[in-house]
Every structure is written in structure tokens, then in C-alpha cells.
Amino acid sequence: MSSPHAAVPLAQRVEELLATEGPLPIVTAGDPVLRSAAAPFTGQLDPALLARFVEALRVTMHAAPGVGVAAPQVGVALRIAVVEDPAPVPDEVREARGRVPLPFRVLVNPSYEPVGDRRAAFFEGCLSVPGWQAVVDRAAEVRLRCEDEHGRAVDEVFAGWPARIVQHETDHLDGTLYLDRAEPRSLSSNEAVAARWAQPTPRRAAEALGFELP
Image (cartoon, rainbow, N blue to C red):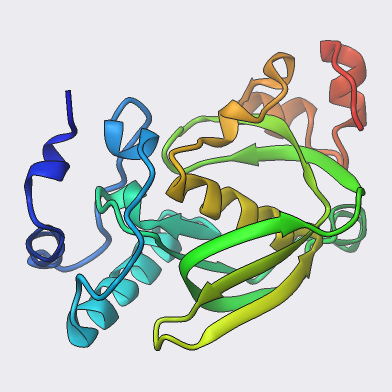
């Protein structure tokens, strides 16, 4: 059975979403739009509508709050995502996770590939899976290829937490949730993470919950 979102032309779907001011509603796990590969953006939205949609994604990301939102998370099956992370974290967290500020940017038709063999595993959450986090082992450095909202080519290497954000949001466009890549034994409620596993690395969680880190 297809998602109800699929029956509506994309431009019409976006216009309907933008008819109401404020943050867009976040689609949660269980909706087929999160489990299908999004269509490449080939001009389905005219420049003015694309700009309005990008701004709505930005507002939604800030309101959540989150560090990225992909179009399928608001029910639009297009390969578009926005990312931004001011990285307001203590120095020890910044150093352990490589969490440095990531300025706002738009990813259109993104793809990524690992750079080198280095891996990093940390707790992740997702706006579409509210209330839970799990440890995900990801490439520590990736090469991102995409376009920006103006059609300009992007070919850039990201490391640390920005690399994690890029992978997480691009995965959404392929119908992949972070839980698909997560260590099952690490799954913890937000409350448990805050109370027990807020250390800069998940080493203590791995020891207590019985899973291995890379």
C-alpha cells in the first residue's frame, strides 16, 4: 500500500503544507514515505516554491529542535534536506565527538562515500523516532556530492559530527532510518541517555548494556 502522500503531485503537496504558517508537522516512523527512496529533484518545484519550502524546512528544524530535516520527514518524497548545527556543547564533548559548528546549508540530490577506514560510534536520535536514541557506527569522514538550492555543485569532505549529520539526513532520502544502522542493545530512551549515558563517548553504555564499539 502506498503512502497517502504519494497520490498528490509534489508541488501541490508542498503548497498544501505551506498554506499554514509555522513549523511543518514531522512524519514519524511507520509512514511509508520514510521507507521509500525519494525522487531526485529535477525542478518539480519552481524556484520560488523551492525557496519557500527550504525556508519551511529550516523553521521546522529550528523549532523541533534538530540539526537536520529531510523532505520525507515532512511527507515530501524529494531528495532535499537542510542541515545546521551551532554545536553548543562543552569542550570535552566537542573534542570527543568532533562536534564543530555546521553552518546552515541545503542538500539537493546528495550522496556520500566514506573517506578512509576510520569509524566513530555515538548515540543518535531522530525527529521521526521521538523519545529514543541508539549508538550508530558511521564513517568518521565522508565525501558529500550534491547541489545547493541554487543548482550549484557541491563536492566537499566532512569529518566528525558534521559527517554524521550528512550521513543521517542523506540516509533519510534512501528510505533508511538511523535505527537500521544502530546497535540494538544500545537503544535507550532520551531520559535514560540523559541520566546514564551523557558522557562524551558511549564507552560506559557499551560496557553496561553489552555491545562493542569500533
